[in-house]
Image (cartoon, rainbow, N blue to C red):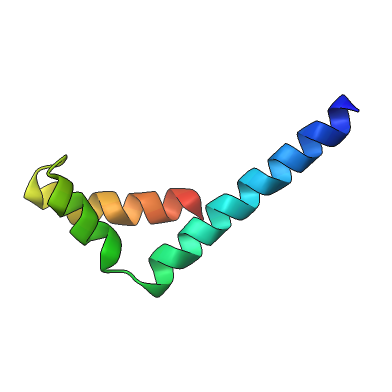
Length: 58
């Protein structure tokens, strides 16, 4: 039973990451806008961080 639960959890996690990556690829301007609006990063780091997040999710 534990191995089934682990397999399902792994599959759901992978699907969620792929869906996030697909969302960032189809709307590439939204993530940098959101990062800039939250002001969590310096302005020069927003674009590289958005690309890194998209690559990490993919």
